[in-house]
Image 1 (spheres, rainbow, N blue to C red):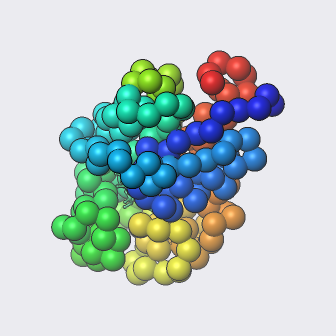
Image 2 (cartoon, rainbow, N blue to C red):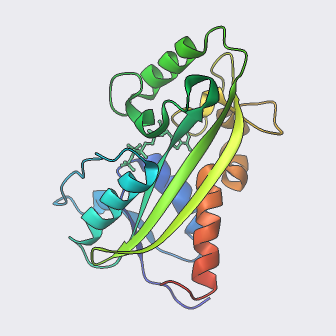
Image 3 (tube, rainbow, N blue to C red):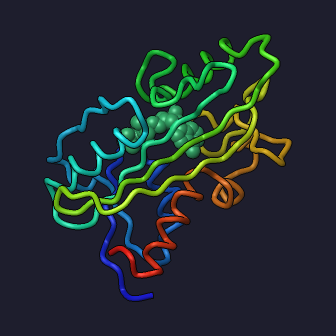
Length: 199
Ligand code: ITT
């Protein structure tokens, strides 16, 4: 592949950065917005993953030079009519508090027989405030009865991917990087880059 320019992730979530760097580090220098302390916080006022990913991608790329990739992601649980969905990061009442989020999820799922769920990831690529591409990925699975494992972040201790018996947090970073919603979305992004359609 040709030498590619740096990629700036429109995220303050260090776990996302670490996972995407692991997936893309061989072809891009991957940074995130924590390297640009003057950038404002982008408010996620959208009601879909795509709307929020666009707000982040366009909001950041209109303020800095270079290629910007935003990730909006979350967990949809069938027995909860798709909740927590776009509100995954604040489901427990406090933005980014994964312990409270998992506690609330377990409470809402108490006694529910249908445990099916999926993670979704929507990526928006942008440059100079213009959208250059949208890439999506999902992973199906089930919500566990109890939290287990220390790997990953967020709802990983409660999410058992289809075809496995352990949570994503138990399975660890290497396996997560082969099957996660983020890995699947990044794969479609990489295919577009390799085919010369973008960047
Ligand atoms: P940025 O907006 O700065 O990127 P964020 O964590 O707030 O960071 P989102 O608004 O996209 O990102 O919310 C994503 C939430 O969905 C995240 O906080 C977790 O609760 C959940 N989530 C997303 N991907 C996940 C994953 O791979 N494993 C576990 N939980 C995940």
